[in-house]
Image 1 (cartoon, rainbow, N blue to C red):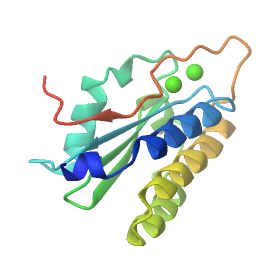
Image 2 (cartoon, helix red, strand yellow):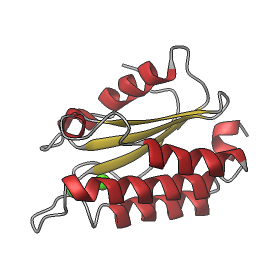
Image 3 (cartoon, helix red, strand yellow):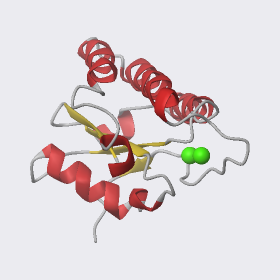
Image 4 (cartoon, rainbow, N blue to C red):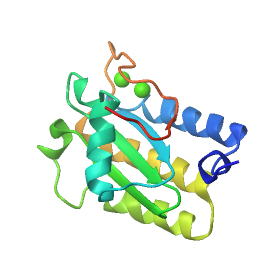
Length: 149
Ligand code: CA
Ligand code: CA
């Protein structure tokens, strides 16, 4: 088994998907998690690439958020779409990142992701509240592996 498969058990993965569902009950923002082994370019560059490959730039309010994890590199990135960046400051994701980093350092990957998702959802809620006619624009399932163009 590779590190990517070992990173989360199936049950942990289900708990993370559930956390995304819960978070999206409070915000119109769409949260996704992508996990891969390693990146051959800067992690911020790779996260942007994955964001586009997952078509996360197609939401109506441009409020998709990608939590990108490169397992072997011990690196992660939280990347929000344009609609979010237009209304928040550069430090917007800092609290989500801090929470995730603290858990990851302890090897608590599931806890870190769930706490990060929860925090990101609460943050987004202020700017992008859930609305009556909300649709699930992006799948909540975790995406894995070396996505290519
Ligand atoms: Ca939605
Ligand atoms: Ca969704």
